Amino acid sequence: MSEIDDFFRSRLDQMIDLRKPLAVLATHIPWQELEASVSHRFARQVRTGKKVSDVDLFGPSVTVVGGAISNAGRPRLPMRLMISLLYLKHTFNESDEGVCERWSETPVWQYFSGQEYFEDRLPCDPSAISRFRGLLGEDGVEELLVQTIMVGMKLGLIERRALETVIVDSTVQSKAVAHPTDSRLLEVAREKLATAAKAHGICLKQSYAKEGRDLARRAGRYAHAKQYRRMHKAIKRQRTILGRLARDIERSKTMLAQSIQQALDPLLARAHRIAEQSRRKQAVKGKDKIYSWHAPEVECIGKGKARTPYEFGVKVGIVTTLTGNLIVGARSFPGNPYDGHTLAEALEQASILLQDTGVKPKTVYADLGYRGVDGEIPEYALKHRGKFKRLTPKEQQLLRRRQAIEPIIGHLKSDHGMNRCHLKGQIGDAIHAVLCAAGFNMKWLLRMIARKGIRPFFAPYFLAWIWQRIQKSSLWGELPRQSSWPQIAGNPA
Image (cartoon, rainbow, N blue to C red; front, side, top):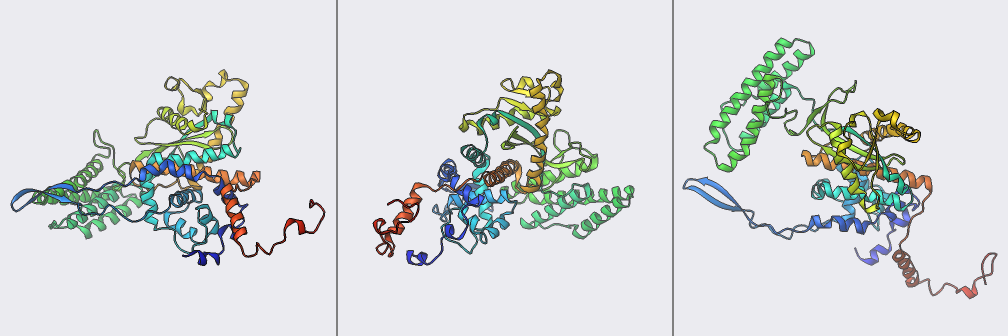
Protein backbone atom coordinates (compact mmCIF):
# COMPACT_ATOMS: atom_id res chain seq x y z
CA MET A 1 0.00 0.00 0.00
CA SER A 2 1.38 3.39 -0.95
CA GLU A 3 2.01 6.33 1.36
CA ILE A 4 -0.98 8.18 -0.13
CA ASP A 5 -3.29 5.34 0.90
CA ASP A 6 -1.77 5.29 4.39
CA PHE A 7 -2.46 9.01 4.71
CA PHE A 8 -6.19 8.33 4.82
CA ARG A 9 -5.91 5.53 7.39
CA SER A 10 -5.97 6.03 11.12
CA ARG A 11 -2.84 5.05 12.99
CA LEU A 12 -3.16 2.64 15.88
CA ASP A 13 -1.71 5.16 18.33
CA GLN A 14 -4.66 7.42 17.43
CA MET A 15 -7.25 4.67 17.79
CA ILE A 16 -6.35 3.35 21.25
CA ASP A 17 -5.73 4.76 24.69
CA LEU A 18 -1.95 4.77 25.08
CA ARG A 19 -2.36 4.68 28.86
CA LYS A 20 -3.56 1.07 28.75
CA PRO A 21 -1.08 -1.25 30.50
CA LEU A 22 -0.38 -3.34 27.38
CA ALA A 23 0.28 -0.20 25.30
CA VAL A 24 2.57 1.15 28.02
CA LEU A 25 4.43 -2.15 28.22
CA ALA A 26 4.93 -2.17 24.44
CA THR A 27 6.99 1.02 24.71
CA HIS A 28 9.20 -0.28 27.52
CA ILE A 29 10.21 -3.72 26.18
CA PRO A 30 13.61 -3.51 24.39
CA TRP A 31 12.45 -5.20 21.21
CA GLN A 32 15.68 -4.64 19.29
CA GLU A 33 17.78 -6.26 22.02
CA LEU A 34 15.36 -9.16 22.24
CA GLU A 35 15.43 -9.70 18.49
CA ALA A 36 19.23 -9.54 18.42
CA SER A 37 19.52 -12.15 21.18
CA VAL A 38 17.47 -14.77 19.29
CA SER A 39 18.15 -13.84 15.66
CA HIS A 40 21.16 -16.18 15.38
CA ARG A 41 18.79 -19.14 15.70
CA PHE A 42 17.14 -18.23 12.39
CA ALA A 43 20.25 -18.03 10.21
CA ARG A 44 19.65 -19.59 6.82
CA GLN A 45 21.20 -23.01 6.35
CA VAL A 46 22.37 -24.47 3.08
CA ARG A 47 20.20 -27.43 2.15
CA THR A 48 22.13 -30.23 0.52
CA GLY A 49 20.96 -33.55 -0.79
CA LYS A 50 20.82 -36.43 1.67
CA LYS A 51 22.16 -39.84 0.64
CA VAL A 52 19.72 -42.66 1.37
CA SER A 53 20.55 -46.34 0.89
CA ASP A 54 17.88 -48.46 -0.76
CA VAL A 55 17.38 -51.91 -2.25
CA ASP A 56 15.92 -52.36 -5.72
CA LEU A 57 15.74 -55.18 -8.28
CA PHE A 58 19.44 -54.82 -9.08
CA GLY A 59 20.67 -54.88 -5.49
CA PRO A 60 21.73 -52.14 -3.02
CA SER A 61 21.83 -48.59 -4.36
CA VAL A 62 22.31 -45.05 -3.06
CA THR A 63 19.96 -42.21 -4.01
CA VAL A 64 20.11 -38.50 -3.23
CA VAL A 65 16.96 -36.99 -1.70
CA GLY A 66 16.22 -33.27 -1.36
CA GLY A 67 19.02 -31.99 -3.59
CA ALA A 68 16.74 -29.85 -5.75
CA ILE A 69 15.19 -27.87 -2.86
CA SER A 70 15.55 -24.11 -3.15
CA ASN A 71 17.56 -22.28 -0.51
CA ALA A 72 15.54 -19.08 -0.79
CA GLY A 73 12.34 -20.07 0.97
CA ARG A 74 9.41 -17.87 1.90
CA PRO A 75 10.03 -14.34 3.27
CA ARG A 76 10.04 -14.33 7.03
CA LEU A 77 7.52 -12.59 9.21
CA PRO A 78 8.74 -9.77 11.47
CA MET A 79 10.58 -11.11 14.51
CA ARG A 80 8.74 -8.75 16.86
CA LEU A 81 5.38 -9.98 15.58
CA MET A 82 6.18 -13.62 16.32
CA ILE A 83 7.69 -12.87 19.75
CA SER A 84 4.69 -10.75 20.72
CA LEU A 85 2.31 -13.54 19.67
CA LEU A 86 4.08 -15.92 22.05
CA TYR A 87 3.84 -13.34 24.84
CA LEU A 88 0.13 -12.70 24.20
CA LYS A 89 -0.67 -16.40 23.89
CA HIS A 90 0.56 -17.28 27.37
CA THR A 91 -0.39 -13.98 29.00
CA PHE A 92 -4.06 -14.42 28.13
CA ASN A 93 -4.10 -18.26 27.94
CA GLU A 94 -4.98 -18.58 24.25
CA SER A 95 -4.30 -21.34 21.77
CA ASP A 96 -2.27 -20.79 18.62
CA GLU A 97 -5.47 -20.40 16.62
CA GLY A 98 -7.16 -18.29 19.29
CA VAL A 99 -4.33 -15.79 19.62
CA CYS A 100 -4.33 -15.22 15.85
CA GLU A 101 -8.10 -14.67 15.78
CA ARG A 102 -8.04 -12.32 18.75
CA TRP A 103 -5.05 -10.41 17.33
CA SER A 104 -7.03 -9.59 14.18
CA GLU A 105 -9.83 -8.07 16.30
CA THR A 106 -7.86 -6.20 18.99
CA PRO A 107 -6.07 -2.92 18.08
CA VAL A 108 -4.08 -2.89 21.35
CA TRP A 109 -2.60 -6.30 20.56
CA GLN A 110 -1.56 -5.08 17.11
CA TYR A 111 0.04 -1.99 18.63
CA PHE A 112 1.93 -4.25 21.04
CA SER A 113 3.17 -6.24 18.04
CA GLY A 114 4.65 -3.15 16.37
CA GLN A 115 1.95 -2.51 13.76
CA GLU A 116 1.33 1.09 12.66
CA TYR A 117 -2.11 0.61 11.10
CA PHE A 118 -5.01 -1.66 11.97
CA GLU A 119 -5.05 -4.91 9.98
CA ASP A 120 -8.34 -6.83 9.74
CA ARG A 121 -6.64 -10.14 8.95
CA LEU A 122 -4.78 -12.97 10.65
CA PRO A 123 -1.16 -12.07 11.48
CA CYS A 124 0.07 -15.47 10.26
CA ASP A 125 -0.97 -19.06 9.92
CA PRO A 126 -1.22 -20.68 13.38
CA SER A 127 1.27 -23.33 12.32
CA ALA A 128 3.91 -20.59 11.92
CA ILE A 129 3.79 -20.00 15.69
CA SER A 130 4.54 -23.68 16.31
CA ARG A 131 7.52 -23.64 13.92
CA PHE A 132 8.85 -20.39 15.39
CA ARG A 133 8.58 -21.83 18.91
CA GLY A 134 10.47 -24.93 17.87
CA LEU A 135 13.27 -22.89 16.30
CA LEU A 136 13.63 -20.80 19.45
CA GLY A 137 14.23 -23.83 21.62
CA GLU A 138 14.58 -23.78 25.39
CA ASP A 139 17.42 -21.23 25.38
CA GLY A 140 15.48 -18.91 23.08
CA VAL A 141 12.33 -18.83 25.21
CA GLU A 142 14.48 -18.25 28.28
CA GLU A 143 15.50 -14.93 26.66
CA LEU A 144 11.79 -14.00 26.61
CA LEU A 145 11.59 -14.75 30.33
CA VAL A 146 14.74 -12.71 31.03
CA GLN A 147 13.29 -9.61 29.35
CA THR A 148 10.21 -9.70 31.57
CA ILE A 149 12.50 -9.63 34.62
CA MET A 150 14.63 -6.82 33.18
CA VAL A 151 11.59 -4.68 32.37
CA GLY A 152 10.31 -5.08 35.92
CA MET A 153 13.64 -3.88 37.28
CA LYS A 154 14.00 -0.95 34.85
CA LEU A 155 10.52 0.30 35.70
CA GLY A 156 11.24 0.03 39.42
CA LEU A 157 8.45 -2.49 39.96
CA ILE A 158 10.74 -4.82 41.92
CA GLU A 159 13.79 -4.01 44.00
CA ARG A 160 17.19 -5.41 43.15
CA ARG A 161 17.68 -6.89 46.61
CA ALA A 162 14.39 -8.79 46.27
CA LEU A 163 16.10 -11.07 43.73
CA GLU A 164 18.58 -12.31 46.35
CA THR A 165 15.93 -14.28 48.30
CA VAL A 166 13.88 -16.85 46.38
CA ILE A 167 11.35 -19.62 46.93
CA VAL A 168 11.67 -23.00 45.20
CA ASP A 169 8.93 -25.56 44.73
CA SER A 170 7.99 -28.27 42.25
CA THR A 171 4.76 -29.15 40.51
CA VAL A 172 3.50 -31.43 37.74
CA GLN A 173 2.94 -30.14 34.23
CA SER A 174 0.33 -32.53 32.86
CA LYS A 175 0.61 -33.76 29.29
CA ALA A 176 -2.30 -33.70 26.86
CA VAL A 177 -2.92 -37.46 27.06
CA ALA A 178 -5.94 -39.57 27.92
CA HIS A 179 -6.00 -41.48 31.19
CA PRO A 180 -3.87 -44.58 30.53
CA THR A 181 -5.59 -47.95 30.82
CA ASP A 182 -4.35 -51.29 29.50
CA SER A 183 -7.37 -51.67 27.25
CA ARG A 184 -6.99 -48.24 25.68
CA LEU A 185 -3.23 -48.55 25.16
CA LEU A 186 -3.59 -51.95 23.49
CA GLU A 187 -6.32 -50.69 21.16
CA VAL A 188 -4.32 -47.58 20.22
CA ALA A 189 -1.24 -49.73 19.55
CA ARG A 190 -3.26 -52.05 17.29
CA GLU A 191 -4.75 -49.12 15.39
CA LYS A 192 -1.37 -47.40 14.91
CA LEU A 193 0.29 -50.58 13.65
CA ALA A 194 -2.52 -51.21 11.17
CA THR A 195 -2.31 -47.63 9.91
CA ALA A 196 1.48 -47.79 9.52
CA ALA A 197 1.26 -51.09 7.63
CA LYS A 198 -1.29 -49.63 5.23
CA ALA A 199 0.80 -46.50 4.69
CA HIS A 200 3.85 -48.60 3.71
CA GLY A 201 1.94 -50.92 1.42
CA ILE A 202 1.90 -54.02 3.64
CA CYS A 203 -1.07 -56.30 3.00
CA LEU A 204 -2.22 -57.71 6.34
CA LYS A 205 -4.09 -60.98 6.75
CA GLN A 206 -6.48 -59.28 9.13
CA SER A 207 -6.50 -55.85 10.81
CA TYR A 208 -8.93 -56.81 13.65
CA ALA A 209 -10.50 -53.33 13.43
CA LYS A 210 -14.05 -54.34 14.31
CA GLU A 211 -13.07 -56.84 17.01
CA GLY A 212 -10.56 -54.42 18.55
CA ARG A 213 -13.10 -51.62 18.95
CA ASP A 214 -15.65 -54.06 20.40
CA LEU A 215 -13.14 -55.43 22.92
CA ALA A 216 -12.19 -51.92 24.06
CA ARG A 217 -15.84 -51.05 24.72
CA ARG A 218 -16.47 -54.30 26.58
CA ALA A 219 -13.41 -53.88 28.79
CA GLY A 220 -14.57 -50.39 29.79
CA ARG A 221 -18.06 -51.60 30.63
CA TYR A 222 -16.77 -54.57 32.65
CA ALA A 223 -14.47 -52.26 34.63
CA HIS A 224 -17.38 -49.91 35.38
CA ALA A 225 -19.49 -52.85 36.58
CA LYS A 226 -16.55 -54.20 38.66
CA GLN A 227 -16.59 -57.45 36.68
CA TYR A 228 -12.83 -57.69 36.64
CA ARG A 229 -12.56 -61.32 35.55
CA ARG A 230 -14.45 -60.56 32.35
CA MET A 231 -12.40 -57.37 31.91
CA HIS A 232 -9.10 -59.28 32.13
CA LYS A 233 -10.39 -61.81 29.63
CA ALA A 234 -11.15 -59.04 27.12
CA ILE A 235 -7.72 -57.45 27.70
CA LYS A 236 -6.04 -60.83 27.17
CA ARG A 237 -7.76 -61.11 23.79
CA GLN A 238 -6.55 -57.60 22.92
CA ARG A 239 -2.97 -58.66 23.67
CA THR A 240 -3.41 -61.69 21.46
CA ILE A 241 -4.58 -59.78 18.39
CA LEU A 242 -1.88 -57.13 18.92
CA GLY A 243 0.78 -59.85 18.94
CA ARG A 244 -0.67 -61.43 15.78
CA LEU A 245 -0.68 -58.08 13.99
CA ALA A 246 2.89 -57.30 15.04
CA ARG A 247 4.18 -60.71 13.89
CA ASP A 248 2.39 -60.32 10.56
CA ILE A 249 4.13 -56.98 9.98
CA GLU A 250 7.52 -58.38 11.04
CA ARG A 251 7.22 -61.20 8.49
CA SER A 252 6.22 -58.83 5.70
CA LYS A 253 8.74 -56.04 6.34
CA THR A 254 11.74 -58.23 5.45
CA MET A 255 10.83 -57.85 1.77
CA LEU A 256 10.70 -54.04 1.98
CA ALA A 257 13.37 -51.36 1.69
CA GLN A 258 15.76 -50.67 4.53
CA SER A 259 14.31 -47.20 5.14
CA ILE A 260 10.79 -48.64 5.64
CA GLN A 261 12.10 -51.26 8.04
CA GLN A 262 13.81 -48.56 10.11
CA ALA A 263 10.53 -46.62 10.24
CA LEU A 264 8.55 -49.65 11.44
CA ASP A 265 11.02 -50.92 14.06
CA PRO A 266 10.28 -48.23 16.73
CA LEU A 267 6.52 -48.77 16.35
CA LEU A 268 6.86 -52.54 16.76
CA ALA A 269 9.14 -52.15 19.78
CA ARG A 270 6.66 -49.78 21.43
CA ALA A 271 3.77 -52.16 20.77
CA HIS A 272 5.68 -55.09 22.33
CA ARG A 273 6.45 -52.99 25.43
CA ILE A 274 2.78 -52.10 25.86
CA ALA A 275 1.75 -55.74 25.55
CA GLU A 276 4.46 -56.88 27.99
CA GLN A 277 3.64 -54.29 30.66
CA SER A 278 -0.06 -55.16 30.34
CA ARG A 279 0.73 -58.81 30.98
CA ARG A 280 3.05 -58.21 33.95
CA LYS A 281 1.13 -55.25 35.42
CA GLN A 282 4.44 -53.42 35.73
CA ALA A 283 7.17 -51.87 33.61
CA VAL A 284 9.58 -53.98 31.61
CA LYS A 285 12.88 -54.40 33.46
CA GLY A 286 15.25 -51.58 32.63
CA LYS A 287 12.60 -49.60 30.74
CA ASP A 288 10.04 -47.04 31.86
CA LYS A 289 6.37 -47.81 31.59
CA ILE A 290 4.54 -46.32 28.59
CA TYR A 291 1.45 -44.29 29.47
CA SER A 292 0.74 -42.84 26.03
CA TRP A 293 1.49 -43.97 22.49
CA HIS A 294 2.20 -40.49 21.07
CA ALA A 295 4.02 -39.25 24.20
CA PRO A 296 6.18 -42.08 25.58
CA GLU A 297 8.12 -39.57 27.73
CA VAL A 298 5.13 -39.11 30.08
CA GLU A 299 5.76 -40.07 33.72
CA CYS A 300 3.30 -41.10 36.41
CA ILE A 301 3.88 -38.69 39.32
CA GLY A 302 2.16 -38.80 42.71
CA LYS A 303 2.26 -35.59 44.75
CA GLY A 304 0.03 -36.79 47.60
CA LYS A 305 -3.10 -34.95 46.48
CA ALA A 306 -6.41 -36.42 47.59
CA ARG A 307 -8.26 -35.31 44.47
CA THR A 308 -5.59 -36.37 41.95
CA PRO A 309 -3.41 -39.12 43.47
CA TYR A 310 -1.52 -39.56 40.19
CA GLU A 311 -0.72 -37.06 37.46
CA PHE A 312 0.74 -37.89 34.07
CA GLY A 313 3.29 -35.46 32.75
CA VAL A 314 6.66 -34.06 33.81
CA LYS A 315 7.97 -32.50 37.02
CA VAL A 316 8.69 -28.75 36.81
CA GLY A 317 10.70 -26.68 39.29
CA ILE A 318 9.51 -23.09 39.85
CA VAL A 319 11.70 -20.35 41.37
CA THR A 320 10.08 -17.08 42.51
CA THR A 321 11.16 -14.10 44.55
CA LEU A 322 10.20 -14.16 48.21
CA THR A 323 8.78 -10.64 47.99
CA GLY A 324 7.20 -9.41 44.79
CA ASN A 325 6.04 -12.80 43.45
CA LEU A 326 8.04 -12.58 40.22
CA ILE A 327 9.10 -15.85 38.57
CA VAL A 328 12.85 -16.01 37.93
CA GLY A 329 13.16 -19.66 36.90
CA ALA A 330 11.11 -22.54 35.45
CA ARG A 331 12.68 -25.82 34.40
CA SER A 332 11.35 -29.28 33.57
CA PHE A 333 12.94 -32.44 35.02
CA PRO A 334 12.26 -35.63 33.03
CA GLY A 335 12.43 -38.95 34.82
CA ASN A 336 10.49 -37.97 37.97
CA PRO A 337 13.52 -37.23 40.19
CA TYR A 338 13.32 -36.54 43.92
CA ASP A 339 12.52 -32.89 44.65
CA GLY A 340 15.76 -32.30 46.51
CA HIS A 341 17.84 -33.53 43.57
CA THR A 342 16.33 -30.84 41.33
CA LEU A 343 17.25 -27.92 43.57
CA ALA A 344 20.79 -27.40 42.26
CA GLU A 345 19.69 -27.31 38.61
CA ALA A 346 16.74 -25.00 39.35
CA LEU A 347 18.98 -22.51 41.16
CA GLU A 348 21.58 -22.76 38.40
CA GLN A 349 18.99 -21.75 35.81
CA ALA A 350 17.78 -18.86 37.98
CA SER A 351 21.36 -17.61 38.42
CA ILE A 352 21.95 -17.70 34.65
CA LEU A 353 18.72 -15.83 33.92
CA LEU A 354 19.59 -13.14 36.48
CA GLN A 355 23.20 -12.62 35.40
CA ASP A 356 22.25 -9.51 33.36
CA THR A 357 20.81 -7.90 36.49
CA GLY A 358 24.07 -8.29 38.41
CA VAL A 359 22.25 -10.07 41.26
CA LYS A 360 22.47 -13.72 42.22
CA PRO A 361 20.16 -15.61 44.61
CA LYS A 362 21.72 -16.15 48.02
CA THR A 363 18.96 -17.43 50.30
CA VAL A 364 16.49 -20.16 49.34
CA TYR A 365 13.24 -20.99 51.14
CA ALA A 366 11.68 -24.39 50.40
CA ASP A 367 9.47 -27.07 51.89
CA LEU A 368 10.58 -30.30 53.56
CA GLY A 369 10.89 -32.04 50.21
CA TYR A 370 14.21 -30.22 49.74
CA ARG A 371 15.85 -31.11 53.05
CA GLY A 372 19.15 -32.92 53.19
CA VAL A 373 20.67 -31.34 50.06
CA ASP A 374 22.69 -28.54 51.64
CA GLY A 375 25.91 -30.19 50.44
CA GLU A 376 24.82 -29.89 46.79
CA ILE A 377 24.34 -26.10 47.04
CA PRO A 378 27.17 -24.80 49.26
CA GLU A 379 26.92 -21.26 47.84
CA TYR A 380 23.26 -20.90 48.89
CA ALA A 381 21.63 -20.71 52.33
CA LEU A 382 18.76 -23.21 52.41
CA LYS A 383 15.90 -22.52 54.86
CA HIS A 384 13.02 -24.88 55.56
CA ARG A 385 10.74 -25.92 58.39
CA GLY A 386 13.14 -28.65 59.54
CA LYS A 387 15.57 -25.91 60.66
CA PHE A 388 12.92 -23.77 62.36
CA LYS A 389 14.59 -23.71 65.80
CA ARG A 390 17.93 -22.70 64.31
CA LEU A 391 16.49 -19.78 62.36
CA THR A 392 16.49 -16.20 63.58
CA PRO A 393 13.13 -14.54 64.37
CA LYS A 394 13.36 -12.61 61.08
CA GLU A 395 14.02 -15.80 59.11
CA GLN A 396 11.16 -17.55 60.89
CA GLN A 397 8.88 -14.72 59.84
CA LEU A 398 10.07 -14.92 56.22
CA LEU A 399 9.63 -18.70 56.22
CA ARG A 400 5.90 -18.19 56.63
CA ARG A 401 5.90 -16.52 53.19
CA ARG A 402 7.07 -19.74 51.55
CA GLN A 403 3.42 -20.63 50.92
CA ALA A 404 3.19 -17.64 48.55
CA ILE A 405 4.47 -19.86 45.74
CA GLU A 406 1.41 -22.12 45.94
CA PRO A 407 -1.08 -19.59 44.46
CA ILE A 408 1.54 -18.69 41.84
CA ILE A 409 1.60 -22.32 40.71
CA GLY A 410 -2.20 -22.30 40.73
CA HIS A 411 -2.30 -19.23 38.46
CA LEU A 412 0.32 -20.80 36.17
CA LYS A 413 -1.99 -23.75 35.64
CA SER A 414 -5.36 -22.04 35.48
CA ASP A 415 -4.48 -18.73 33.79
CA HIS A 416 -1.38 -19.43 31.69
CA GLY A 417 -1.77 -22.97 30.32
CA MET A 418 0.55 -25.08 32.47
CA ASN A 419 -2.27 -27.44 33.40
CA ARG A 420 -2.02 -29.18 30.00
CA CYS A 421 0.99 -29.26 27.69
CA HIS A 422 0.27 -29.95 24.01
CA LEU A 423 3.87 -29.62 22.76
CA LYS A 424 5.76 -32.69 21.58
CA GLY A 425 8.54 -34.47 23.42
CA GLN A 426 10.75 -33.50 26.32
CA ILE A 427 11.91 -30.33 24.58
CA GLY A 428 8.24 -29.35 24.23
CA ASP A 429 7.77 -29.76 27.99
CA ALA A 430 10.78 -27.54 28.68
CA ILE A 431 9.68 -24.82 26.25
CA HIS A 432 6.10 -24.81 27.54
CA ALA A 433 7.16 -24.44 31.20
CA VAL A 434 9.33 -21.40 30.44
CA LEU A 435 6.68 -19.75 28.23
CA CYS A 436 4.03 -20.18 30.96
CA ALA A 437 6.39 -18.46 33.41
CA ALA A 438 6.95 -15.63 30.89
CA GLY A 439 3.18 -15.26 30.50
CA PHE A 440 2.77 -15.02 34.28
CA ASN A 441 5.45 -12.31 34.47
CA MET A 442 3.75 -10.39 31.65
CA LYS A 443 0.45 -10.45 33.53
CA TRP A 444 2.33 -9.37 36.65
CA LEU A 445 3.85 -6.42 34.76
CA LEU A 446 0.43 -5.35 33.45
CA ARG A 447 -1.02 -5.36 36.97
CA MET A 448 1.90 -3.40 38.40
CA ILE A 449 1.81 -0.82 35.58
CA ALA A 450 -1.90 -0.23 36.21
CA ARG A 451 -1.28 0.01 39.97
CA LYS A 452 1.70 2.37 39.75
CA GLY A 453 0.21 4.49 36.97
CA ILE A 454 3.28 4.30 34.71
CA ARG A 455 3.01 6.37 31.55
CA PRO A 456 4.08 5.28 28.06
CA PHE A 457 7.64 5.93 26.98
CA PHE A 458 8.02 7.72 23.66
CA ALA A 459 11.41 7.33 22.06
CA PRO A 460 13.14 10.50 20.80
CA TYR A 461 13.00 9.31 17.20
CA PHE A 462 9.21 8.99 17.51
CA LEU A 463 8.87 12.57 18.76
CA ALA A 464 11.13 13.74 15.94
CA TRP A 465 8.93 11.89 13.46
CA ILE A 466 5.82 13.67 14.80
CA TRP A 467 7.58 17.04 14.51
CA GLN A 468 8.52 16.34 10.88
CA ARG A 469 4.95 15.37 10.04
CA ILE A 470 3.67 18.64 11.53
CA GLN A 471 6.17 20.69 9.56
CA LYS A 472 5.29 18.93 6.29
CA SER A 473 1.57 19.46 6.86
CA SER A 474 -0.17 21.97 4.59
CA LEU A 475 -1.52 23.76 7.66
CA TRP A 476 1.97 24.55 8.97
CA GLY A 477 2.25 27.74 6.90
CA GLU A 478 -1.16 28.95 8.07
CA LEU A 479 -0.44 28.51 11.78
CA PRO A 480 0.29 31.78 13.62
CA ARG A 481 3.74 32.21 15.11
CA GLN A 482 4.31 32.57 18.84
CA SER A 483 4.64 36.37 18.57
CA SER A 484 1.04 36.66 17.33
CA TRP A 485 -0.47 34.31 19.89
CA PRO A 486 -2.98 35.91 22.26
CA GLN A 487 -1.69 36.57 25.75
CA ILE A 488 -3.55 34.35 28.20
CA ALA A 489 -3.00 33.52 31.81
CA GLY A 490 -0.04 31.24 32.22
CA ASN A 491 1.31 31.87 28.70
CA PRO A 492 4.68 33.67 28.74
CA ALA A 493 5.22 36.60 26.40
